[in-house]
Length: 430
Image (cartoon, rainbow, N blue to C red; front, side):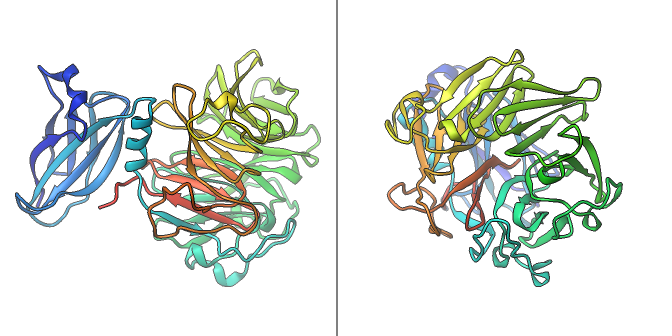
């Protein structure tokens, strides 16, 4: 039976004067469990809480990013009566705003990887891992991890020449590739029957369609939701290996793609084929396409992130170009982001930044200030599983490869060389 709506509240009442005459309010709770509200603080976070009876402690149920004043969330049935309330907080580009963002996240956990494999060019996959817990499987230099809307997480596992999938129960499966590097056809064919060769990037549509940068085969491959693999296009004119190829993005209608090619960001269109969007980079990491006029680019070799417009003009977004300087609470342009490898936008308007050599995860706010979320160090650094994620004094991660946000707001961090995929849960601690 659906819970009764009791009240709304804000953790920061000082934010309320803007809505003094018409405050934040719950507007409905449907029989299917969809809760709606209006006039939330933006950008901000709405936290749904429940209590079995009045006077009992409120327990967090779910967080939702507020990018507009009206919002909603669908809750699982709890099987009994109770009470719900929603709290809204804003996330301004200030120290207090960063503290509110940190408070909205909870446990750190390992989704995949047991840390037993490090050597490049070596596959650590074993048949016994298939269908078992992801955290029991050895990964082989994973390079990108990203989720679909259902919560499945896909991993470009370079050294095992495959795309792996961690399902919503935490079990791991081979999604594409045969775990033997090579090329044995364009497809279409079942994705696990065709070889990949050192996949070094992927992109996942909401419906679970996966695009793979098949680096040493010089192709972008598509895996449809029914598990069929085929070639979308060649990333080199003759399909030869793409030296320094990292990261790929494909539009939902498959009319446009961007990918990294060591010192160049290249594009592909159905009508125009391959072109160079921007060049002159040192050693590219990941890319993220915000709009047709905003491609976010990490240059690991230059220790910087750029925004590239449709004309190919580069503007520095973060990093001072060095391995050190600045730091937590400092301007992003004055901070050394050593080996900046991963970038992902946050619904707050800020960005997540992940460094390879620096082994750190940062949050860049809209005022241009960076805040340290996860600290780390080189080697087999792996700490903090099952604990509250935020403690910058304790190294918890190793070399970063990619960072992404899933559809529930969880942060997914792909680490290599030891091979882990970690998650920071978007839910406050009870």
